[in-house]
Image (cartoon, rainbow, N blue to C red; front, side):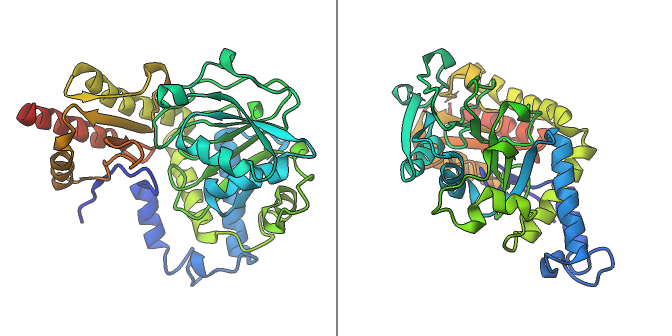
Length: 360
C-alpha cells in the first residue's frame, strides 16, 4: 500500500496510527462484537468513548472548569448562525473582524440575527494581513467580538490573542485548533470543525464559558441551543458518534506525541521549511505579510501561472495531492496540518526546486 502526501485543506490527512487502529477496531470494538458506528449512543460502550474524548480534549487544551464542551454537527458554517442565536443575549449587535473568506461568511450569516459592526477589515490589502488591533473600532456594548483565527483559504493567522476587555471573544479555530497551546480563558467561545486537525468531517466542537449560555433567541432550534446540549452531554439528539470516536483516537495520538507544545514545534519546523524556500526564490512567491503567515495553510504562486497545470501534474506523479489553491485566490496552497510529516514538506520543497530548475 502506498500512502500519498495529502495537502488537502480539509477533510485533511489523519495520523496513520489512528487510521490503522480504527481499521483494526472496525468490526469489533474492544470485544464488544460490534463497530463503533453501530453502537447506541446511550449504551455503555459508546458513553465511555464519548467521555474519554471530552476528557482528553480538556486535558490537551487545559480547558478551565467553568467552560462547557459541546459536540455538535453542522460545521463552522452552522456555527455562523448558532453563535449569534446563542450569544446575542438581548443585545442588538456584535463586532466582527474581517480577515478573509471565512470571516465574510460569518458576517453574512450573523446579519440574519442582529446588527453586525465590522470593527476592522483587511479587504483593502486583499486580505494578506491581520489588521493591527489599534485600528479596530470596537463597540463596548457589543454582545461579542468574532474573529477567524486562521483563514484556511487566504493563509493568514493570528499569532496573538486580541484583547476585547469585558466583551467575550469568539473565535472560529477550525483550521488551527490542536496545532498549538491556546489560553482558552481568553475566549468566551471557541468553535471548530473537526476535519482539519481533529478527525473526519461531521463533528464540530464548541468550547463555551458557561455564563454565556442559557439565553438563546426564541427561534433557536433545541439541537442548536448550547445550554440544552451542554445539559444533555451533547446528546439531546444523536451525536456524530463515529467522528467523535476518531477524534478521541486523534487526541490520544496528540498526547503520545508530547501534547500541543510538541505539536507546535513540529508545525513551526514544517512551516519554516516551506516559507524559507519561498523567500529565497523569485520563481515562487508568498503573498502574505510575514508576521501573519499561517502555519497551517501556505498559499503560494508561480511567477508564470501558465505553468500551474504542469506543476500540479508533476506533483501528483510524485504522490503529492491537493496542492491547487482555492478557486477564489488561485495559485497553490499547501495545507500542512498536524498529520503532515516533516518528510512530506521536505518532499514538496525538493519538488519545487526541481520544477524551478527545469522551468525557470
